[in-house]
Length: 321
Image (tube, rainbow, N blue to C red):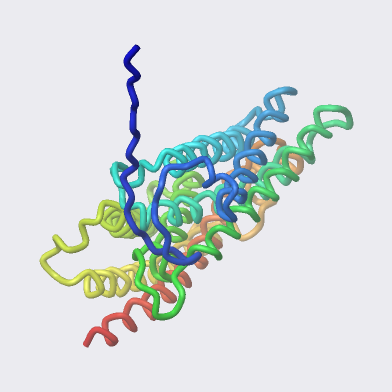
């Protein structure tokens, strides 16, 4: 009887990461590589974290929901990356594979870090002793391990001096990820318009956060979509101009936000006790004064990030010149 022989061909391409240049081949062996094992650890830790919390229903309130979102999102995206790596779908992936994995790993690091800090401090400590609290503590532990695993991937795959790789693997690219993430946290804390409405200076600060977030997000999307060459000016020049504008805008917010939020002469509340909406014990949420203080701290952090971004971006322009 006739025998039919089926031959499978695998499309291969070459890519360069911080772990060296390698050929992309769809194979289960990717799971046993150094990076594959690290991603399996990320997958397991995030899965265990949200499974423990779901099992006992310990994720009520906005802070619990945030932690649950962080773990579920990281688990789903890590699973997608593993499937793409194993199947060899990198050339068919709609985004630049030189930029996407490290950009995602950086976002996942920040997500798990925020969940590892926010969840225990605003939720777990208010739980009574028992199995719910023990499960929540265990979930926090696995969240911390996942954070370290994602941070390790960023350290392994970031660009080394003299290495040609994607923009997102460079220091300015990683700073763009950090800046957009911090802006998203700021948006979460100013979701209540009461803390900035009716004061033009505070509304200006909100506009600053939005403008800088949009510009940084555009830079990230251009890199992920490999569209940097379609700009009317060179990409490094665009990044330097963006950083200069962001530093100037954030400098104004760095002064105006705390001035109008905490100076009594400007109608602010310098002490938490002066805010009637801030009880001594406030489980699972934060009051408006806490939001104001957090935004002030995050504004300072993002200002420093944009300053560092400006230094690195300007250096790239001078090198090109």
